Every structure is written in structure tokens, then in C-alpha cells.
Length: 345
Ligand code: TXA
Ligand code: MG
Image (cartoon, rainbow, N blue to C red; front, side, top):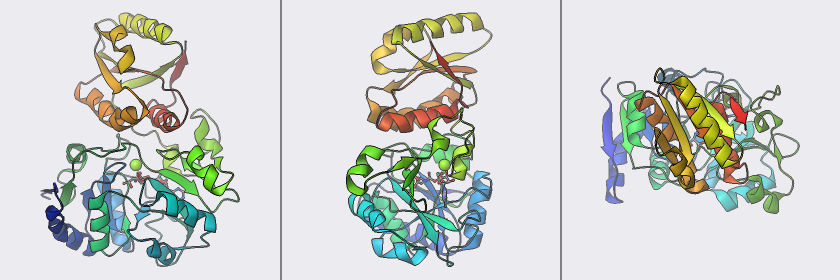
């Protein structure tokens, strides 16, 4: 299959989405930008489209997809038992990086929800995503547009790396703003529960809806408790090299990493991921800068993990990030990429 690349750089270019919309109405797939990561879209109400998504990504078909909408009125067409708290969050954060889980209506095929009787719904804020959903019938299933297990794509070139030749079209809308997938909150639980940390945090939600829980299955990656979002149980975002997170005082972290790199000698290619402010500790080593602050680190993380692969790094050490606010989502992704491998020094 030849993959067509369509670039959207201005409002006028949105006209170019007509062809993309037709592909999805006919049951085909289109990758497109959202404000979090690029998504691989297909009509959420056509069960064949979901099958195609699982095949293109190489994703287990018991891992449900998020349904993307462009208008709040469409929520109750696919979901039921929607509590008022959910509408309050929608009012504050939609369109935006928030996914909410509800009981599903029967129009949503089982293949879209991986056989679950609940459905995850999000209204993205990226203008290209919104326009495309609107033109394509209003209900677009879209997981991140990466091969299953690889870091999520934050630019169109990442999507091309993974899916070129496997899907008919990629819409290029430039680099995404946030860089980590949406926060998922489950409204089918007695107390609303965060199943995947993201840009929006407990601190954003609690002033609006009161108590919010965090799924125990995601707090510690070494925990024996199974996460409730099926996708959170897999090793994910993983670069080809073996990644270890090193946590502690930054000087001791640098000493540990340098000692380890020395032990590996020339037999292994070692790469370090560090904060901008700690770069001088690693001046004489192969290193990649994650960023200065949390937002920058979130935006760069997946791209940096892909660069580790481009560099064919065998061994990767990353500084740990402080687990507050957005740092919780960053560390969640980093821990999954590391397969839970953390050293405290
Ligand atoms: O930011 C995002 O959410 C991006 C963009 C493209 O919108 N999408 C995304 O989709 O990250 P995906 O498929 O890569 O991740 C969806 C996650 C998976 O962990 C899946 O298991 C969980 O959501 N999920 C989906 N439906 C669910 C449900 N009904 N119950 C529990 N977890 C669900
Ligand atoms: Mg994903």
C-alpha cells in the first residue's frame, strides 16, 4: 500500500481533509495529529475499521480504543449513565487531553472496546483533529499511531517510521504540543479513578468534582496489582536498548551512571538521558537532553526515546523526574519504557 502524506499548515489547508474523511467513512485508516500525540484513526462505529487498526499497529485486540468526538452532544450517543461530574470535567477540559470512561451503548462495536462493555471517550483540541472528526461522521477510534510497544509519535515522521506502507494516509500537522497521551478517568468506578496519568492531574480535577482516586495498578510499576486500563499492563514506549532509571541526589546519580558506563567499556553503546541543568555532568558521554522543565520534558520524551534507537544505543540510563504534577505522567511512561527497572542511589 502506498501511504499518502498530506500537510496541513494553515486554515485554508483544512479543505484537504475531505479526502482523509472519505477514507475513514469508507472504513479505512488515517493518522492525524492531536494535541497529545498522533492518533491512528478509523470509524469507531465500523467493526472492520477497529480490526484494521489492531492489525496496522500489531496491537492485541483485547486492548480497547478511545473514541474521539468533536461535539459534547455526541457523548450520550455512544455512552450511558454519564454522571454530572463528568459533564463538569467536560465543561472545563474539553476539547483537551482528557479521556473519560462510561458504560457503552450498543452502537459501539465490541471490536472498538476490545470486548469491554465500557467505552473511553475524548474530545481533542487540535484543530486538524476536530475538523477531521467532524467531516468523518463524528466518532473516530484512535489509538496512538505507533507500532504497538514503541514510543508514541509526536511528529508525522515518527508515524511514517512505524506505519509507512501499512495505511493509506498520514496527515502532517507539525509537532504536537503536549507529547504525552491524555489523562484517562474512569466514571464507572464508585469514585472517579485515574487509570492513566497525563497532562491533567488529580489536582486539576478535585476542586471541580471532589475526591478522585488513582488506580493502584499504575502507582508502582513493580506493583502486583493489575492496572484497570488493559493498555497499561504492557511494556510500552520501549526503546531497543535496555533502559534503567537512576533516582537520587543528582551528583550521586551522575557518579553511578559514569561508573556503570565505564564498566561496560567499549563493548556497549551507552546513552544518558538527563535534564538540561545536569548536562555538564555528562559532557564527555553520549547524552540526550530531556528538557528544562516538566512541560518540555513531556514534549520531548518520546522523541528522545526514538533517537536512542536511531543511535542504536545498547544501554540507556535516564535521570529520574520528580513525581509531582505532570512529573507523575512522565515517570509513568519512563517506568514503562524501562520495564520497571529503577535504581536508587
Ligand atoms: O492522547 C490520547 O489519548 C491518544 C490520542 C491519539 O488521542 N490516544 C491514545 O490511545 O493514547 P491508546 O489506544 O494508545 O491508549 C488508550 C488507552 C489504553 O491503555 C487502553 O487500554 C485504555 O486507554 N482504554 C481504552 N478504553 C478503555 C476502557 N473501556 N476501559 C479501560 N481502559 C480503556
Ligand atoms: Mg498507545
